[in-house]
Amino acid sequence: MIQRAAKTRLLQLLGQFPAVALLGPRQVGKTTLALSLTSEADNSALYLDLELPSDRAKLADPELYLSDYEDRLVILDEIHRLPGIFQTLRSLIDRRKRKGKRTGQFLLLGSASIDLLQQSAETLAGRIAYMELTPFLESEVQSFEWRAAFIQTYLERDVPSLGPRVPAETLHRFWQMLGHNQGQMLNAAQLAAGLGISGQTAGRYLDIMVDLLLVRRLQPWASNVGKRLVRSPKVYVRDSGLLHTLLGIRDQETLLGHPVVGSSWEGMLIENILSAVPANTQAWFYRTSVGAEIDLVLETAPNERWAIEMKRSLSDPKPSKGFYIGCADVKANHQIVVYPGQESYKHDAKTEIMPLDTLLKKLSRQETR
Image 1 (cartoon, rainbow, N blue to C red):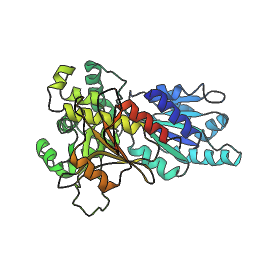
Image 2: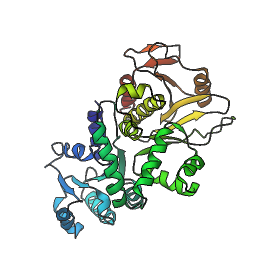
Image 3: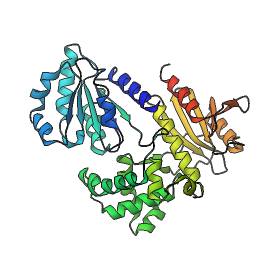
Image 4: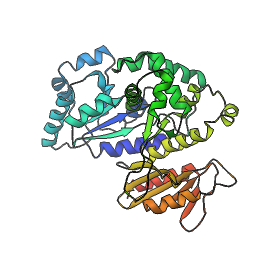
């Protein structure tokens, strides 16, 4: 269901914008998803893998080469390998617009958001949309050995190739520390002390992990509601499978006995939910100093605000008192408790209890409004 939803969303964006950037870590399925569109595109799509010297050579003069493919969707994989191409893409997009072609021209795939977002946002403003492919979804299963190899390869080869110069072992320890603090409020000083580095350096490491789409920094609700609000973000290792590998968790029995089990469940739900929300949805968590708390607040459209609490309990997934207080504070008009059961039911006049897949279907319907 998730993969079909991602494909549908990508096709929608290509039907609305001249260029779309599909972002996500390596081996998460960006290329597979992009290539699945070739049968959907008129005259099929042109695919170039910019990690291959032969494909990069074709773009020695990108304007000349791409001018021959004006009627086809052009997929440029690992776009960060060819910095400086965005100006040419802008010129080609504007030229094609004058000829009547306004959408579905370029699909840009990137393993990191650092340079890609900066360069494309500046050069292709108003011409490009962004879509993230979530690292780990409910329907996916990965082996421990594969995940361990992924972590090692990413730290030793991929991160240095993308620009950041950080010792692999140091970044691995930092990633593990984030895993041990899954879903907790960010304490940069504590992380820095654990690695023997400055708080500024710890902040830079976190920026790298967030930019590489490996870690999510969920910001707190900041609107003034006349209450003392928590100001520090929450931090999650985005891929639950990688989280478990970083912490040495090999099976479900070990996970169920590990302190991270609750926050792992919460992080997995957040990634699935944010993969299904409409474009331009804003997401926060809400917490006050006196105990009002909402795990996830979504604003999918003006005056369309969702408050979501996450419970692992099958027998008694009722929301907390702090959840109701938070819902009143943020003026939520959807109050949802997600739990691991199969049935959906009303808990009270305003609050629904439901499984994840039901919530995802509800959120996906918001896209079509």
